[in-house]
Image (cartoon, rainbow, N blue to C red; front, side, top):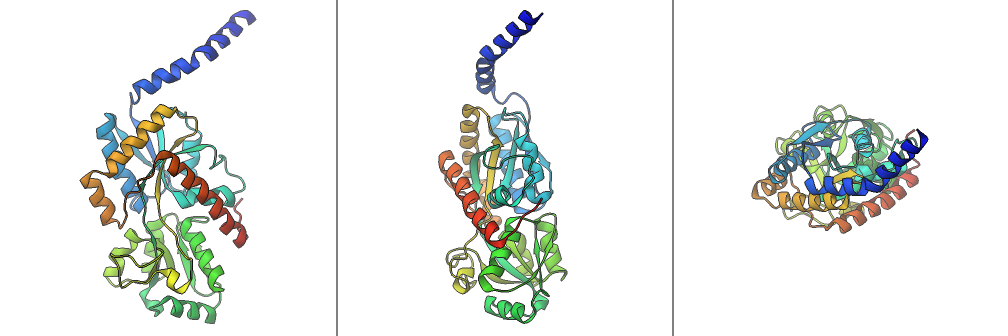
Amino acid sequence: MKIVKAASLFFAVMFLPMFTQANAEQYPSKPIRLIIPWPPGGITDVISRSVGAALSDSLGQQVVPDNRPGAAGTLGLSIAAHANPDGYTLVMSDVPSHAISASLYKSLTYNPAKDIEPVALPSRSPLVLVVNSGLGVKTIPQLIDLAKGRPGQIAFASSGPGSITHLTAERFMSDTKVKMLHVPYKGGSPATAAVVGGEVGMYFSCISAAIPHIKAGRLTLLGITLPKRSPLYPDTPAVAEAIPGFVMGCNTGFFATAGTPQKILTRLHTEVMKAVALPRIKNILEANSAESAPYTRAEFKQYVADEIRDWGKVVRAAGLTVN
């Protein structure tokens, strides 16, 4: 019996690479699960579903969106990290939140730097600093003065503890030497609604979620987190004009489980970049104040590694940890 088991194990190990290669050649042969670790309605959800629909057409298999919000995106990423590395479980998430989690969380069930494989960067867009119109401020210096005069009394929203919207506000407080109250929500949509409703005063929002409310006068736009003013919003100052070096982005990344065959990863990168070049996807990106990022897979992988390093510095400087 032991000899039979040993022989079975030998053949399994010997032929596993051949089976893996055969599966990669046939990929995809069944529907693909696309995890979206944020609630419906936000920019990541909109872009994920749009790209997923285009991939369904190009790959010849249904790409099924699966929203798994919670824990600032780490719940959905954890599911992807522990999936079979066969290309049938993918995940779309904003890169900064993924990078932040590497140093913020002390008890993650996965390693963000090792267990999630970067595939492609479908879109990138800035954050905007918005306030409830009832707060009565029109500029960033006015907001800073108000916060200094009312330390700890002005609340800011975030899309969850440790998210880019949280850490960006933490950096804002650090750079301006003000103290504000953090109120986390489960995603960008409820956070935006909280600022509109006056539950909180301030929010660093993905631009697409804020624009309709800005145009309707429900939110006041104070700044955009680009290095300089955007041609689309020339009258809106860059936050860096008031706070030198303050540049952030709400960039959506496409990831797979680590260990996924290289041939599958290469094909997925190719198909994602073809998708974002389609006129209908370009229109969706532009409608959400985003643009495609023409990174190679190697460049995207390096970008993610750089983000993990740089956001780690912000987390440590703020003295933040989540168990």
